[in-house]
Amino acid sequence: MTVDPNAATQDFPSPEPARGRRPQAVGYLVPALVAGAVALALGAYGKVHDPAGTAFNLAGFNSTGAVKSWLATAAMGFAVVQLVSALMVYGKLPGPSWAGVLHRWSGRVAFLVAVPVTVHCLYALGYQTYEPRVLWHSVLGCFFFGAFSAKMLLLRSERLPGWLLPIVGGLVFATLTVVWLTSALWFFRTFGVTT
Image (tube, rainbow, N blue to C red; front, side, top):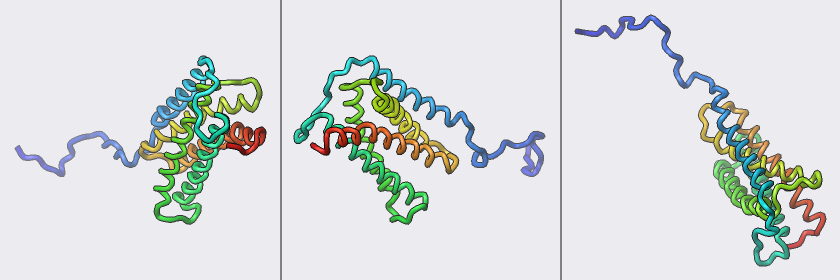
């Protein structure tokens, strides 16, 4: 039996090629659910955990508050590098060819520096709401790690709309900024810029 390659073999339309399809909303559901789960888990742990009062201290610092504030300031500095390098990557600012590498590594360092701050906040202080500044700090601190988790998951997604990653990245940056303003900047203004 011979097969004619030009003969019609089916009487229904062929499926649309995969590369032409737009991503479905369900593809964004997983990062959103993970973001919510991370934020809620951190908040729940901070709320039910009995605060220990201290989690760590580093030699050369007078208090754990100073350690936390300086580490948070370092994380914020690397987050600013993230913002500037993202603007370079997206062509909004002129930049070197290695702006993408700078963006990835500054993000990694910012995250690694922020982790001990978060551990200290959750373990030593817990989730607190006794005044508006502290409430905003607690809520947005948990939200930051949820939004960061969503951003990391979205980086691996295929066929993202061009606007999505900058919006989520901007949300992560804005959240970290408010977290820094309600903690490290408050500490420096209240107790002075000390180590």
